[in-house]
Length: 215
Image 1: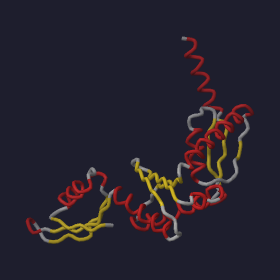
Image 2: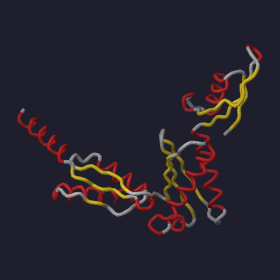
Image 3: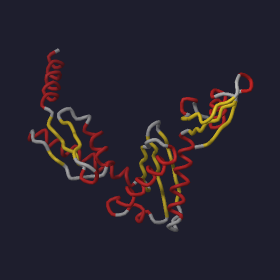
Image 4: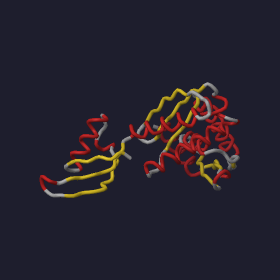
C-alpha cells in the first residue's frame, strides 16, 4: 500500500481523492503514525483505491505472462465489487488450458497475490478473449435445462463438482426460476451444486398467478 503524510486524515484523503479522481468513500486506509498537536500535528497512513488495485493486477499478470514469453493486452474493469479482467495473448489456448484449467489457476494466483498485497479479500474474474463470456452462455442453457428437468420430475439433481465460476453462474441464473433452489455441498475440488425442487415457492407462485388471472 502507498504511504502518505499530512496534517490530518481528512486532508490526506482529500489529496488522494483529487489525485486519483475517486470518491473519498472509495479510499481504504490505515493510520500508521500520528504525532504533534494543533497546527503541528502530523499523520502518516497507508491507503489504496480500486485504481491502485487495477494497476497492481495489471502489473502482476503482465509480469507472469511475460516470463512465459507471452505478450498480453489487458482490459480491466471494476464494477464496485468485482474486478473483471479480459486478456488477449499471442497464445490464448495455452493460457486457457483444458476446460479453462490454466485460466482458473492463474486467477487463483492473482487473487492470492492481491490479498497478500492489500490484506483483504478480492473478487477477480479472468477471461481470455471472452472465453468465459461464451462459456457463460453455455452454462445458462445447461442451468435452464436442469431446472426444467427438476420442475418436471420434482426430483433434486446433484451436479458434478465444478469450479467456483461455474457454480456462481448457475446459482445466479436459477435464482430467477421460482420452482427451484440451489445449494452448494463439499469442499475444494469436490464442491458441487444441488438443484432442488422448491415446492413451497412453486405453490405460492401458482397461487399468486391464479389470483391475478381471476381479477
